[in-house]
Amino acid sequence: MERERERERELIKAMPSIILALLLTPSSLCCILLSNIYIYIYKRMVLQHCMHILPYYSNFASICQILPRLLTFVCFVLFDQFLLTISETNLEARATVTSGWLQEEMDLRKTRHGGFRFPSLPRAGYGEAQLSPTFYEEDCPNATSIVRAVIGEALQTDLRIAASLTRLFFHDCFVNGCDGSVLLDNSSTIDSEKGAFPNNNSARGFDVVDNIKTALETACPGIVSCADILAISAEASVSLSGGPSWTVLLGRRDSTTANRTAANEALPAPSFTLDELKASFAAVGLDTTDLVALSGAHTFGRAQCQFFSDRLYDFNSTGSPDPTLNSTYLETLSALCPESGNGSVLADLDPSTPDGFDADYFSNLQVHYGLLQSDQELFSTSGADTVDIVNSFSANQSAFFESFVISMNKMGNISLLTGTDGEIRLNCSKVNEDSYGSSATLIAEY
Image (tube, rainbow, N blue to C red; front, side):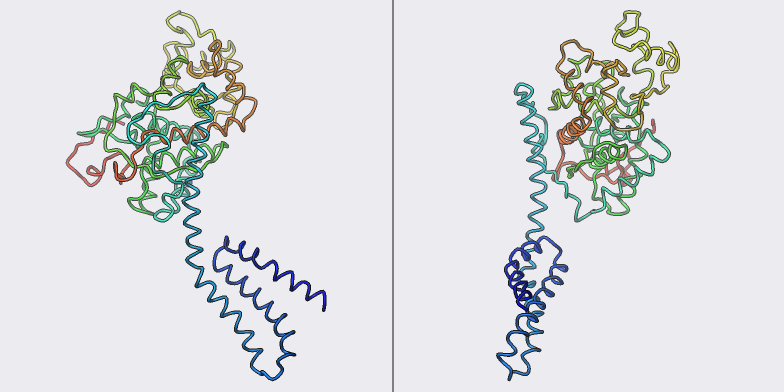
């Protein structure tokens, strides 16, 4: 009996901690647990120890059994709103913490790279955009799952699609920001970025984006932007291929214009030198570590012979192959891409694991197996600060993954349309007035 009383006293002492813990659980579960705890205390403490003191109160036992239920009901009516307040505060805090974490990483990058100062950008700059990981939680809570499911299905028949969708996000963000402009077709008012040299007959995955949009419009019409579809698709593509997963910040809106001229000028070319690559990335607020980390996306996917054949036969108009190209690799590529052969033939960007997202890309650079000149430049440029980063990522895949996530989030915040700017396209390839059936004539080139 004494032992039971001791347990009862300990339970009473623990009640504040139990209640605090229960505040973090759904209110229905709280009701069940608290109700049973109260009943246990009243039955054990009151019925056993009070009834012998008040033997003449015949209804006392019934009252003691009803009282805990009444107390529980009153308690949860009183702090139901309190629980809702905590939930809402947590959602806001998650977005704040994510944004703060990214800002800290940016500050750290600045320290590491000599106080690099980001240029001012049009529209909402990095860290200023109104993005949140829970942006669609109320209006389209299954948005991410829907995107992931469509991509998973596409991967069953097209192993390249993950790399292609990741590249689309990159090509979107580097041209006037992450606004879905890369998806727009030609029209009477749109000069499509799909016709720009870096994209023409090269960028792909538009059909999968259309399938994603169709699925989202069925589930939650007019809610999820095409710009956000690209952001979610990039994360899903990387993670489904064995790479890292991350929380995607959402809330981008779609542009109503495209810029083919900017696409021709802003997107890094496969023949760029390291200095040209750095300048291209700096123009959109990305530093050297971002350059190396994001180049690591070439760990999966393919490239056409036309984008690297000059390295095999006439590098920089010398009449000779690129001296930084491994001789064995040169023979392999020459057999695949003969001089004056078909320039659209595909070669694996990563010959060791062409469809997996890993750190092998950096190990390939160390043995001069970089397919594109812009890849090998990161390691073979004498005295370059990128060499140490390549070595670090090659030796530590986790370090690569962590840096890649940071850089993807930074890139995903370039020059955004948020709030009431832009629109939410109903069809990712057309601005809404065309989607509603305007008289604008679409030019079907792709």
